Length: 145
Length: 97
Image (cartoon, helix red, strand yellow):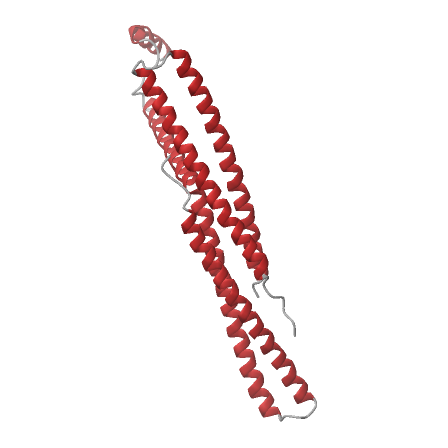
């Protein structure tokens, strides 16, 4: 048995995932604040407390920052998904290798079978007892006469 | 505005259980390796004439039984770990915006 699960390696990945999840939470809180700022800005403009120019400048700034936060959150979550994939691969490494080995063996057998079939078609392989070769030839001769 | 935030406690528990499962699998794999070594030793002893055929067969049967049990156990834990990881994937996807 060559392959063994490496718990330390898996622990490294789970630590990375946890660190990233904490970052995601902080970014989600920041995003929440940003979205509230957008709402507030809207209300202030509707109540006539700020001019259209200031509203538009603030609105653009808040939206851009929100978008950047959303991108960061999604990137971190994507990173976590790739860590999870690596953990799954670490758990199933041996089986995968065995599967590939079996697949290669099957392919080899298929290649040999198809080669034999090809040779048979071209008449390189003749079935039956080689001692009865003359009988086979006689039949063939009769058929074609 | 309120947005749904990631549950760090839930994820912490999930990650802990993944670590535990990895350790469990490793321990079982080491046991399996020992059993395989014993199988080889048993065969060697028999070939050298140190043990009788009967004893050899008995030991072999027991060790093979143990191998099967360990393999089943490893597979079971592996499945559980994968189910937990699938749940973690779901949480990550849910939190995407």
